[in-house]
Image (cartoon, rainbow, N blue to C red; front, side, top):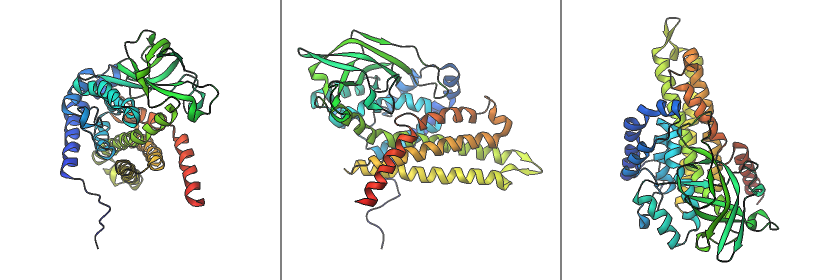
Length: 388
């Protein structure tokens, strides 16, 4: 009897959005990816084109002008964009991380004001949680918000903020109760980018994903109205972490896209490159490297899809999202590394695409929760499941 609950086929609508993203990648991203990697120039015009096609702000609800895509459908877009350039994909999709806390906890007024404007013009937003002294250790965040009258005053410094220099508004996590445990100590705020007291740092010169805009942001006596508190005071940690249930599968999908590109480039080169009288793809050592790429890519994609499906169908997906993120990140790094090896000396040269893939891949194991943090979540989940 055929299964009525599980399907590995995509609907016509899903195939259409996947094809739209794939064509955009082929026509717009791949031709300019190397330029943006060399120069670090922000892809403003390309983002505008992506926005016009509906490839930006994909999970903003239809009520506020967005496509209202679920995590599963959005992952199809993420994989295709990252196939072309994960740095450009990060620049395009970083909005989603800033928007996710609003989707989790914003009221109608906040959604209309801040999500609505994102669909009216190609604006960017940024998620401000990480600090110079606190990344994975969210409980160690030092940015503070103090209530003064009907406003909150924020002071602190954030670091490694994607879209930091381009954002129209920020989601900011700040400590509002120094004596409470992490789960009740923080509050989320929506902060307008033109607020007095915001200082934007220099664009960081990163190892990879150079098309994205990464900066430090300083908040000095920045006043935020009470109406811009997200959810309730003390719920910020829960909201910020809940956003990852939406975004980690999409980051994982991007890692799958990069890994797939590495496999394609390595395969094409291995078919054309001859040694000892035959194509190197016919040498078992090389063939097995490419086979391992395929194994990892297929497995990681299925985990991405499962994490997305769970979220879209009202189930908690934190554990599965962490598995998808950890697995896909490792697959991306290993596939890119092996692609360089397949290319040999040519792989070490900037005239070929795989060295960029290798540099771009590493950040997948770091941002939106390191691979070690994902394993902490996964390990705890295993114990809970086995011992319940």
